[in-house]
Image (tube, rainbow, N blue to C red; front, side, top):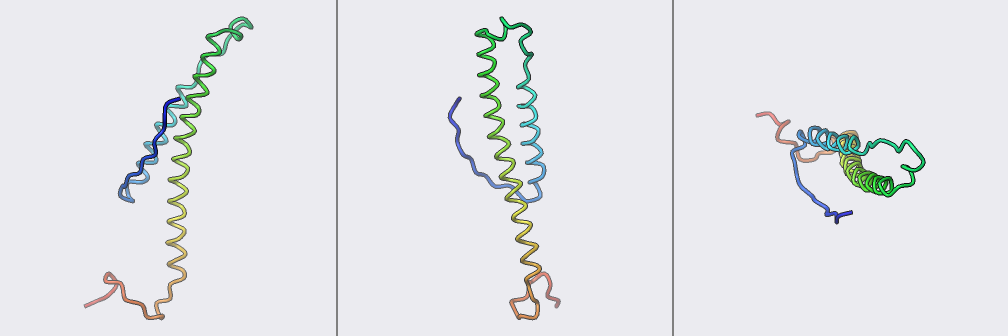
Length: 107
């Protein structure tokens, strides 16, 4: 298998859903490419072609697993972000006298 690199990039929060959808579509395409016909005879099953096919399938599944792990991490981080926002909103007491938010002040 080829070497892997870790990339990090930034997108707008409102683009996250479409980015995850794009990654899921790519994962589905990879999954669809894994399907190969099974050998029909014992001789075909115990052949060099089958050995190569099995190795190829394993490599493609490993690549798919990396992709799915990335998707899992992105969704998990998003859920943690949303949970933290919700908890922060629940724990905020407006009577404690913090600095008012500019969007809520009236002139």
